[in-house]
Image (cartoon, rainbow, N blue to C red; front, top):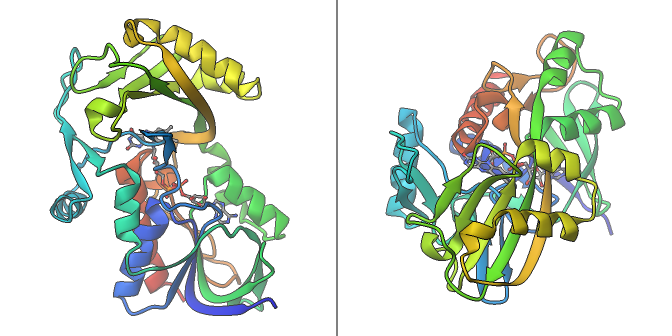
Length: 329
Ligand SMILES: Cc1cc2nc3c(=O)[nH]c(=O)nc-3n(C[C@H](O)[C@H](O)[C@H](O)COP(=O)(O)OP(=O)(O)OC[C@H]3O[C@@H](n4cnc5c(N)ncnc54)[C@H](O)[C@@H]3O)c2cc1C
């Protein structure tokens, strides 16, 4: 029997932006429901296990630049869900410390979701502007949600698809802005090794040329109990090979990573394709109030395509969206 849920604010996406917004909205006294099609929390902060091996296969680390975000990182460290991983790796000195989630990147999302009502493994199929007052949202489990205000945090191409399917007219100036946003693809390989990888401390390699953008050693990082590396294909390579046989592309990346494997052998590997990994062209505003100057019920878009193409940007965008939703009627 389908259920009808009622909430002040419905948030599509339990990634960093959605969960960060949810906490601020709840703090402001609003009833919030978050819905995510994924089984886990955190969106692109993804982790996976293969036997005894554990991998971060989405975001690898985060930096902290702005004061409120730095304070949040301190809270996460105190709560035991984050720690500094390193401040620079060989050949790439950099002033921004790199933090990681503990035990994996998803720990931060789980922490942010502690007091939030999240419906997982549930996809939003369509949204309907109900007489300009409320949103009527249809879910793939047959349930519906009636919400006063709506926040969408999916990658922008997916958001545009949802709006088009739902026949929501996007004002032309905003359509143009949203159409400019672009993401890099990333093919991620998770490989279990039979011995230690040939990667110097702190266990991270960023490469500027060739098919590989990044390799991390999940054992040195403290994520995995056994030797296990994550390889991220470079944006151009990943886009070019995105629709090819995944295991073959994975093998190509493993072959290209040969010198970092040393004498070890790959025991087993899995491959994941991120069609929208990191934005390469972002919008200038920290979030977008789509309903502004329209007859629509309040609708805001947020995510890393707005406040900066990374972990911190997603959180900042969530906070900006919460502020906009609190102020908009
Ligand atoms: C391979 C990779 C490497 C990265 N490396 C780094 C890094 O090292 N450092 C860094 O700072 N950042 C990195 N990033 C970027 C970082 O992960 C993102 O900026 C950030 O996680 C984005 O958060 P978000 O909330 O904007 O979006 P997301 O995490 O994508 O959250 C959106 C959520 O919406 C859900 N959703 C979408 N459509 C629907 C629907 N119709 N119904 C229900 N739910 C829906 C999705 O399941 C998803 O969980 C990396 C990303 C990837 C993929």
